[in-house]
Amino acid sequence: MIETLLISTLIIAIAMVFFLVRVLFVKHGEFKSQHIHDSEAMKERGIHCVMDQDREMRQKSKFAVKEH
Image 1: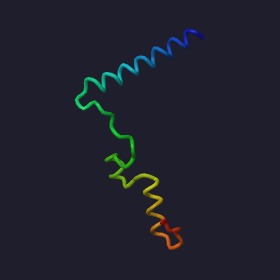
Image 2 (image 1 turned 180 degrees about the vertical axis):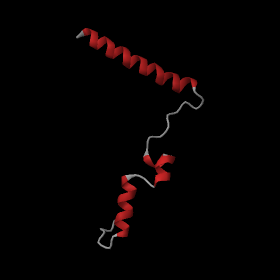
Image 3 (image 1 turned 120 degrees about the horizontal axis):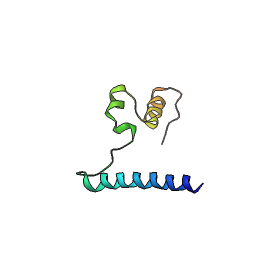
Image 4 (image 1 turned 180 degrees about the horizontal axis):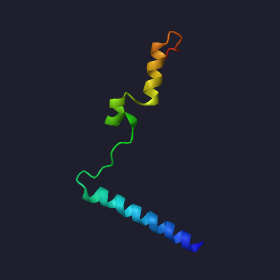
């Protein structure tokens, strides 16, 4: 039991070190956005945020509920 806890703690500590290295030593050490609308690959495929897709479908439908 204690071995599993120590191994888990070690893995988490190593991951934290990697994050720290990324933030401190990489120029503009920021993480890329994980949002769909910021992904070039998703834009090329025509895939975007579910909220945007919902808004588009509501505008296309003649039965759509109008937002105020």
